Length: 140
Image (cartoon, rainbow, N blue to C red; front, side, top):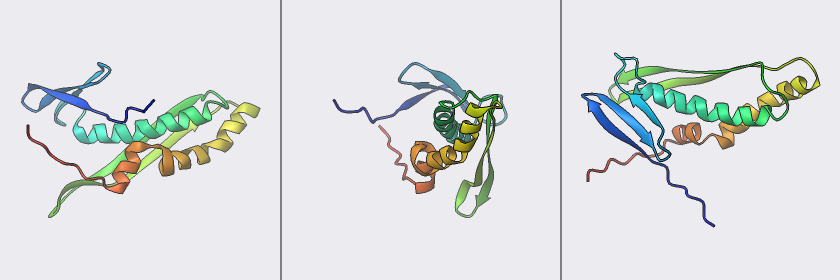
């Protein structure tokens, strides 16, 4: 059996500069400009980076112990220069605590390796950003 490798979301216009994104499973999220409560495309990119690595790290560490707290913050600087708009200095900050005891100690000990594995190998989103994968616009 072959694995389905294609990923796709569809954005449908609600009003000018505001859209509903829908995935193949029927999930939705509102996307808009930064002057509304909706997530902007840049914020969604940061969410994708943080969510991808958070899931990896959570799966690996929670096998040892359920975390007491688990927060991942993703920040970047938006730059406008002669080359156009981009993000620089993207930082992913993990704030995770585990319970006292042997299982918590095992999870704490595994945390640095789990973060490293996610960053270097597992997280499709951050690896794609770092590789600079081309984006092709198509008009149908």
